[in-house]
Image (cartoon, rainbow, N blue to C red; front, side):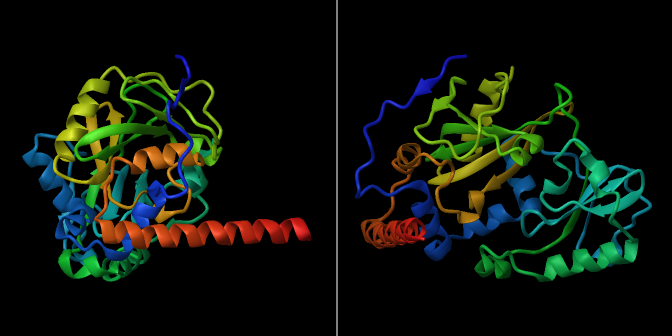
Length: 311
């Protein structure tokens, strides 16, 4: 698998990068479809209408007090539907706070959670607090959502031992790059970006190290691309997250604020970030405002760098 260098000129000073355009969405974009993609239950219905599989649904309740913890299997996920990272995991009948999974990304895996078990009353209290709490990146969307609790089985990788997360960054219904990593890679600060033909992009600056070895091309890559583009049709930008499991190729979620709007995202390479942003047009007035904000950020970085050198 050869390295593929971006055949792009150095970005111009006036070019907006991906983070700048994502910042504009966070600050200004209030289209109802964005709120609908935040709702995990509504997302299931959207995927079903397009014939795209999701994890089996074991239970759904409006109030955590209605949840029968005796009914689900001993190993499952319990999730609030109104935001990412609001997850509990049940292992051998014991509940734990899972969050976004960072705590159990290391070699210990799920065993890392064993020091902080949750009682059923504590789990219900935490779920109720999550349902009442607006998503911090989109508090405006809370009025458009109907928060619920859903239960799903644990997913197993089709090719053990690693369950890879394939994040398809899709612009105007076209996958431009696939970010691939597993939880252990992310804990190690590793990630890689592939093109549609599974050639890794050769970035000019890496924020993370490349996994060694690189993830193998999935056998169902074409199906992954086709279903991602089906779900993203008509949308200016969305990240389609897929899991390759023993139950088939499943939709994880449609992410509208990847990296939570972090600066220098999705990579540390400005040329790559600007190339991605070039596939995401903004209205002229929005582009002008966002450019001013981006220039202010660069000026702040230069000032901080000068102060560090002065010390």
